[in-house]
Image (cartoon, rainbow, N blue to C red; front, top):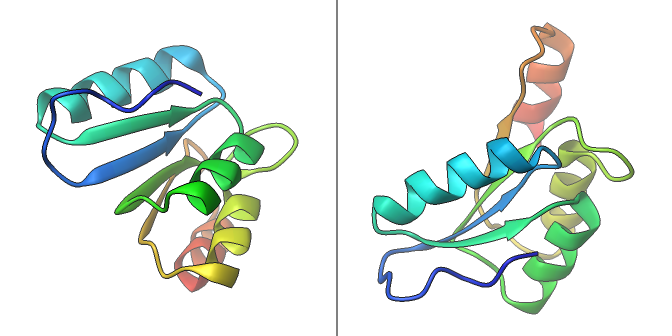
Length: 102
């Protein structure tokens, strides 16, 4: 996990993706747009970060090893109403319906 973006004053966004290039690109773009960004390289790290300091928004990769973005969303929903944006490259209607339900 990387530290929060320093100097930004906008809403805090937690981004979780196991692909470091995607994670870095998303975090850099959001930080340039003025958001405070925290990065997590796994679903478990994202859950821990959210439990310690809930963000204003979570952006989660659906397909991460161990704990998927869907698993993270389910866990987070147990304790918070933090908005969640799920990202995937898959074209699966059932997956989309499940994500919307979460």
